Amino acid sequence: MTERFGSYQNELYLQGLGGQLPPCSTDATKLEASAREVMAPGPFSYVAGSAGSGATARANREAFDRWRVVPRMLTGATDRDLSTTVLGTRLAAPVAVAPVGVQSIVHPDAESATARAAASTGLPFILSTASSTGIEDVAEANGDGPRWFQLYWPGDADVCASLLARAKAAGYTALVVTLDTWTLAWRPSDLDQSYLPFLQGEGLAVPFTDPVFRSRLEKTPEEDRGTAILTWIGMITGTDRTWDQLPFLREHWDGPIVLKGIQHVADARRAAEAGMDGIVVSNHGGRQVDGAIGALEALPGIVAAVGDRLEVLFDSGVRTGADVLKAIALGARAVLVGRPWVYGLAHAGEDGVRHVLRSLLADFDLTMGLSGHRTLADLGPDSLQRT
Ligand SMILES: Cc1cc2nc3c(=O)[nH]c(=O)nc-3n(C[C@H](O)[C@H](O)[C@H](O)COP(=O)(O)O)c2cc1C
Ligand SMILES: CCCCCCC(=O)C(=O)O
Image (cartoon, rainbow, N blue to C red; front, side, top):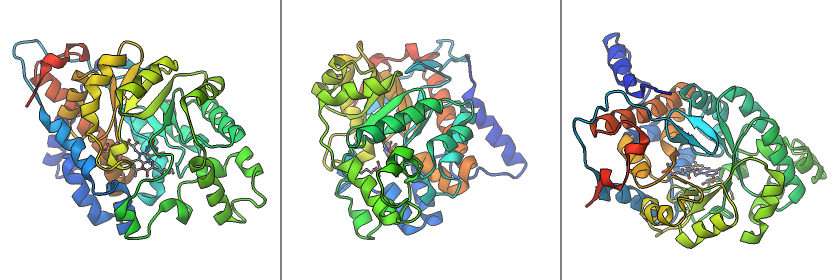
């Protein structure tokens, strides 16, 4: 499979000749500033914000900056193939759309717009349990596109089993279990505005459409929204989870299972010992533990420890094509991208998401070629230098 993602560059130049500009910047680092202009203050802070002082979010970017690409010449990298297989899904490039909840606070078309944009770009869409659009509705919007389901693991086993069965039936092929957000971190930017989307009823389509969850309520969510919201929040934040509980997920999910939020080598080893198919090395984009290491700092050690036993995916701070290249060179099988496309959604719905994703892929494709790499297999520690 050879995709010429870099040709988006020509498309943008040609559109410019016709007087048409892109829906938002092609530079992901500029998108946050312009998103502030088009988003309401609460939703903007929720998306852009991070835990505590923001030290972890900054560390994510600094970690990327410490690694530099060392370009090679005359390698025949004009005709590139960036394709790969991740969690059993054949992909034209090693990039996935990270699970992001409550997209209705960003744009009325919410997850359906993002799922359509992901499908048209050929990247996997990962549906959050905190989605404002239901499992089946998103599957319909995503059509033939690849899709995975992210689980916030509810304490009620039957509710959990029901969500997993629905996701499976709706064509989600891999399960991404997020471990790092069993309660929300101290997030000053949200607290200063007393803004939490869930308490305002956003983002609960997944449980609210679930028959087993509904059976746990005395009144339906339509009749008593407040109680339904609090019941759900209690279910996903109120249960201690430990490594010995993972077999439950295996019993209820027959596809690949990935643990998201791994940062310590010892946890990566435990995931491998538990028979998981993969992990996502991630600090949740700096939204959970303030003062944590930049996620990329954890990647090489984890790949060295378990890379031969499970698939190591990566997220937190990916903004450019060079970032994708660096993470893959350090051993990631694929990267997940979060905030940049959320800002694209805020600017222009589905078109905005597509533009951000295509820009990232074009940047990655051109950076691969210009640094002498024809395929992902050409990337390795040799491609980089730590400064
Ligand atoms: C607004 C927002 C909502 C998020 N919601 C979820 C979620 O529901 N489930 C989840 O596993 N991760 C969630 N994440 C974390 C992302 O999946 C991802 O780990 C993170 O955004 C990656 O960092 P980046 O934004 O720097 O790319 C969310 C992130 C943001 C910014
Ligand atoms: C207590 C779980 C709510 C999670 C909400 C979405 C999310 O992951 C975030 O970072 O915000």
